[in-house]
Image (cartoon, rainbow, N blue to C red; front, top):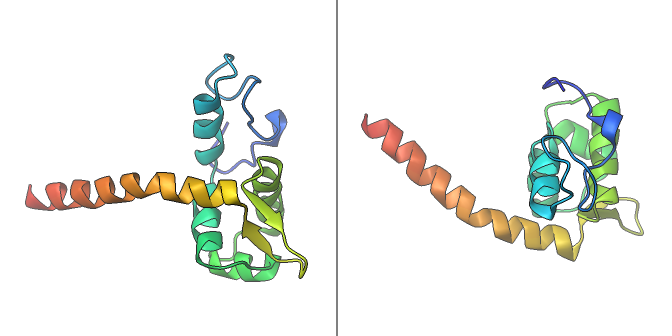
Length: 120
């Protein structure tokens, strides 16, 4: 799969089935496949700040194409990381919020990494 594709040929990566890079169905491999899809982490970040509608997310994500945004939002909804609320905005589910909390150590590590590279 290329970096600019939507990744739809295999559908949303979910635990229990084959995913990019693995046929085991392990949850960790499905998570890595999902999180490795272009724009997914950015959308999770944006939704962690506040719920948003389609057009607002598109603007906040550097005007990504509507087809890619639609696909990525479907991926997040199918994976139960995001949902649409009563006003039609997308928001993180409790599982999505838990994911953001789980990513906090990676953010801390990346800051340390950047500082280490600056010293060289």
